[in-house]
Amino acid sequence: MYICICHAVTERQLEECARSGATSLEEIAFQLGVGTACGRCRECASGFLEQIRAECACALAPTK
Image (cartoon, rainbow, N blue to C red):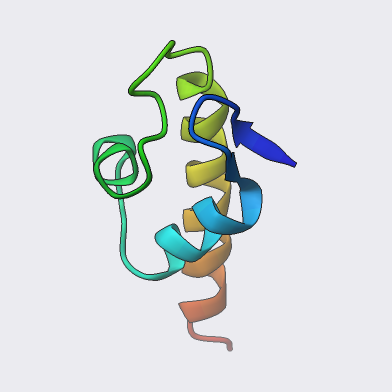
């Protein structure tokens, strides 16, 4: 699914960017252009980034 129509950025691209170390919407905007045109995707991209970061944190958390 497209997250940013203006720059044709998909969920997969955003996920790859986040898993490669991007930790903020500003970093993703710099790398992919998300939210730099009309801005309608910023809220969706931010929520998706939070979700990916939470998944990454859970994957790295030690198990008992």
